[in-house]
Image (cartoon, rainbow, N blue to C red; front, side, top):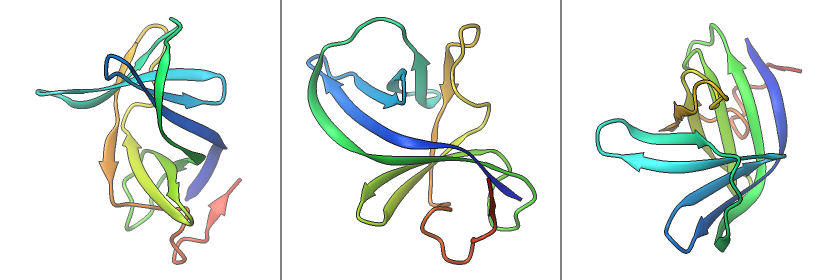
Length: 122
């Protein structure tokens, strides 16, 4: 079953120090890459000065359970062009106040523009 949890507009920007910022609704996450772990979203409440806009568009957040061709976890999809989406897996969700860092894993699994997957529950 595929359940849509959230949707809206996102913005991905860069600071003058090369730090990527992901804005989803009223939340901002720092997006970093580490050698050992890979890509991480980090919770931040500090104001950051944006230098450059990298991408913006719509996003979709899905919860996937028992779908044969998809991983059973949260899927975040960012619109990267007209009807083009980039998928990311969030194995343990978004960062929180207590767990400030969470993995974000790029994937080829895309739900939004996949015509075979029209079973989305709201």
